[in-house]
Length: 344
Image 1 (cartoon, one colour):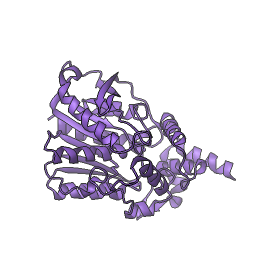
Image 2 (tube, helix red, strand yellow):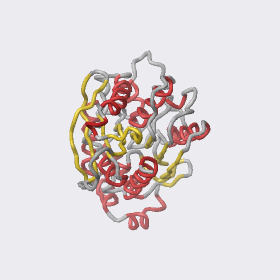
Image 3 (cartoon, one colour):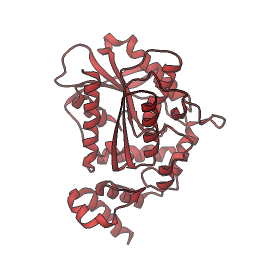
Image 4 (tube, helix red, strand yellow):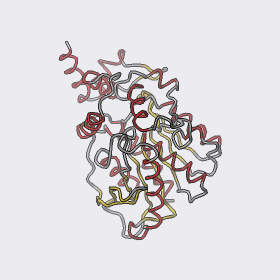
């Protein structure tokens, strides 16, 4: 029976979405009134058959799972120039990768400094290669993907410290990197969006130069893990509450205050003075409420916010474009916002 379920899940992953919807609509999961996209539900079912959401894997297994998942399900992007380089972090040079559209002119370009997701424990330049390349080509900008130090080898505050130094380095090495310093955005997904929001809190608190925009894709901004969407989707195969708790335990020292703004940016005293924001949320992602709450805070503090909702989608769907068409649409929406924000 398990073998048949696995075959059915694989078939739904790869068959056209309208066929899946025709045969499967009545069985689509619903979370807080939000019905799952049929392709996203198929991917979640497939993952649920091969791993237990309540049994967090080892660090090595987790890293391997993410790398393999993206390699199988993300569509490549070839229409960019890629260049590997290093960018300074708090403890020395760190790997980075620069993307420029093939048709980009010589000279400085608007630039997005991107921080990958992965629970502060996994992910890197390779897992987010195609996503960063697509953002660069579709927005007509330069993207620099940055590999900050990962836990548990390097727990908090290593990652946010690296991110702060990398951001400052863009200004110091602007000529060599061909960065237009007046048109820099920072962004990331999941843990990378957390680091983006943490960076902006630090820049504000220390009265440092702000970027021109912030891109927050399913941001994790509340380490309490008590939001309604976290509870409703606690056993979701792609990102369960047990996995999130495991990531936080590896990332944060035992005595770390989890409500400190560098950990949970939602609790920053004020977000006033930050740049315009693009916040993308997925309805079958436990972080749905995090993104909604943070967008509301940004708006309350007077910032221009574009909230982009994909109510049927799952965590990580922008890295699954080979099998989830809405992932490709979401990347285009983010790229369009980047172009409007940085290229005006």
